[in-house]
Amino acid sequence: MNTSGKQSPGHERQPAGWSARRRRSAVAPASGPLGPVRLVLMLGTVAAVVTALVGVVLAASEPSELAVRKSLGVVNPPGPAGVLSFPNEVGPGGPGAVLTAAVADAPPPEPAGPPAAPVGEANPTRLVIPGIKVDAPLRAVGVTARREIEVPPLSARNLAGWFKYGPTPGEAGPAVIVGHVNTRTGPAVFQRLRELARGHLVRIGRADGSVVTFTVDGVEQVSKTMFPTERVYGDTAHPALRLITCGGVYNRKTHSYTDNLIVYATLTSVTFN
Image 1 (cartoon, rainbow, N blue to C red):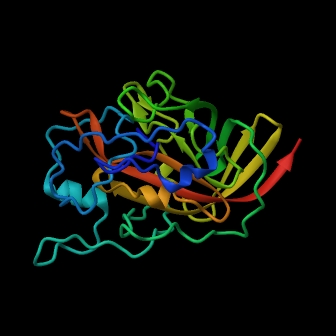
Image 2: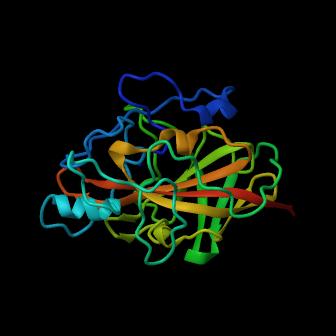
């Protein structure tokens, strides 16, 4: 998966959210292939952020148009011109909810709780999400030679990666954590990520002994050809967190999912040991 805030092909601008890390040598990843998903009519050229999060799913054929539409959670059928309809804002998510991509220019969801003040820089070391039984170590990830974000190895099922060219969790701006949904040997760290809903808590232990707690604001599932770079990586008025994994239909030919699942959260408390 490449959660590094990929840009449209031919664009050299870094995502706005990276301004919190100008002192670091951030690199904007490039896009990955979509495979057979031609239904999405290039409504945006922003590349997929998580093309490398690959899992093994039993699939007998390439995704059908119906399967792709279902994976996108499209609410309305195509209009006369074949344009897909999407909601105006990121939804709250939750078990059984149809996860739908918001319109391209929608802002991040409003905080579910009063935002806490930012804290200083400290690398994250552990991720705990009680609502979906996640308790996993964190390691820093960067970008590959292909200008895609690195991901934890598929052999490490219970390992998540923090994108080191963005803010550390708790600093001002959006911190990004990526993880696999599954591997060749079974479910991975973010296998239940789609069950999160507005109000769930995400706790991150940091190297300075602090624990930063984020409250989930919303969840969306988006096609990798329509990744909302600005919504995910754009500057925020408060410390924020983005959890990203793969979703949608698995394509055996490209060894990639059609979609990305994105969880938006806001820092709501900080404790120190």
